[in-house]
Length: 316
Image 1 (cartoon, rainbow, N blue to C red):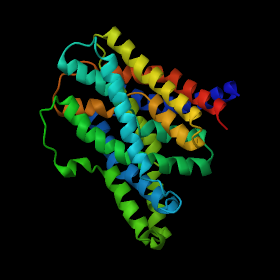
Image 2 (image 1 turned 120 degrees about the vertical axis):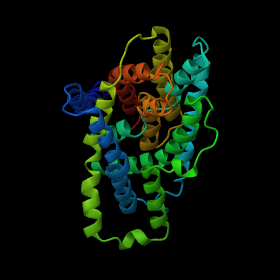
Image 3 (image 1 turned 180 degrees about the vertical axis):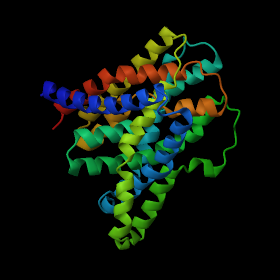
């Protein structure tokens, strides 16, 4: 059972890796430049991903089917707090306020959108993938609010104490909230296919484009002096202890399969690539973020299918 699950998970990771590698090569060969990568990233965040979220929720979500929908944003906060506490627990050898803040951020915030989106689409049959994606989008509602508020606060070393409320409502978050409002009032039932189908076609572009962005972003990372001790601690905490904890709880509590899968997935994926964006935007010296994002994604090629395989072999 484990070997079969590992084969399926490994093949899924390999497919994702090949799409990311395409983005990496396109940027390294200057076929896709930095400006083009920024445009592509904006296209995903502001157009294709919101379209995917909107169609998924207005078609498949209802408050009757998901009466405990609010648990998923709450779950994202719980997972963030767990990562934060573990980050500080393992960060004691890391010296310097800026360096420690970056180390803690690497463990606190995961690649919660792109990789789980890709993995669910590959490893699950269509009917289960649809439910898993609904779980994921509800989870992202809480995660995006936290990373673009507390995450910015942490990485900017508390220099930005006031946040414009509008900055918390990124297009994906706005799409989730707008979709939930339409579903709540029943308006989604009257949206014609002539509107939904083009949006669905746009949303279907999200996965390959998002992985191009991840691969291209990794190509921009410059690894000059790798801090081995910090990276070893990061890998241990982020890619081994956290997913092991999630696996233990999911199995011990006998959680529903897709809910347990979401938890294990979110705890097993590598650090968020958006951390690099935050550091660059606030003009902070990149001491650990680039190292952690690159090495985390590299090591997760092994650890992610390992923990997913363990999960599938332990639950039915």
